[in-house]
Length: 402
Image 1 (cartoon, helix red, strand yellow):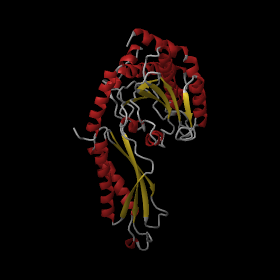
Image 2 (cartoon, one colour):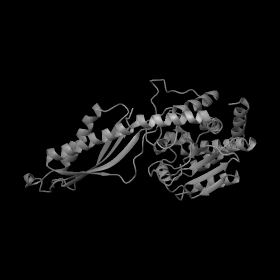
Image 3 (tube, one colour):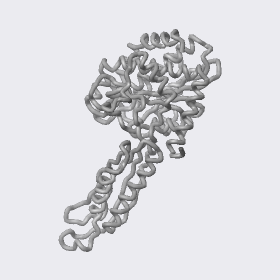
Image 4 (cartoon, one colour):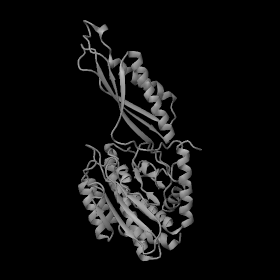
């Protein structure tokens, strides 16, 4: 990319820095839970209309939006994603106010570059995606066709460290129910079939299984119903269990092993059991497109970022996101970036950091790097073709076909 365009994007984002910080601060001061993000939705929609995007408010869902700018020259479509939902009690402890800021900043820079140079082909979409913290907003948007015709999807996520290939792993959720038979725990215990024993045995099986799963897999469970009274043999118990893994095939295999843990506990205790998948769809693992990621890295490093991916002591932010589902449909990136805190995500300390001035320089860099990457996607046909070839290869590997 020409130095002039890099300089133009940098100047554009810098000129909007106070405005972008204001938007981030307003969202941070008004945290809203999944599907309730009316303030953030209305604020971002208002801003994007003022910046002369074509905006669809309440897009698919009441608190989602889609803002577009189309060049007069046909070409690819790049989506820049904004998130803006918060967590119960602790507000923006995952920094989604900053994700909204970076997505907005990147969108403004891309649009301004396209206006300055009408020969840049294609379309930029700033997509507002609610309910990442449970609710699977992006999966609903996927099902509604929001990513049809999209060539690349870009977003970033704040955290304690800079990681290009952050392992956002897939997650499936289920309830395990055991049914036995109630009886007087002192008078006639032999007449009972203890469903609590089954739940405890199942949980213990999970604990034993953890030793034999891959390092990028996770099992976590809690017993949510253990009985009604100590002097009654429990006839009905429940566990909630989450399984996570870095690939679709590994998650399928882990789910089978977790199901076997429940079956063996039922057999051992004489109970019956049932596994009920959650109504909320599973989050797939993030499939980072290395072609897009390495170009993003080039621009981020130009602005001073140093990534920690090769440092074994730098523990990455291993979580799950509905962006994983997007990455299985469209070539995508979702790197994490440091906002100058040792606090971890989903903590009160991170809430404070996401609203602090120290978070701003790094957030502006992500906006610049995403904008430059997006412009390369729009301008360089061979670069985009390479990213798409990598995407198809990654899909096969994720499913264990190669």
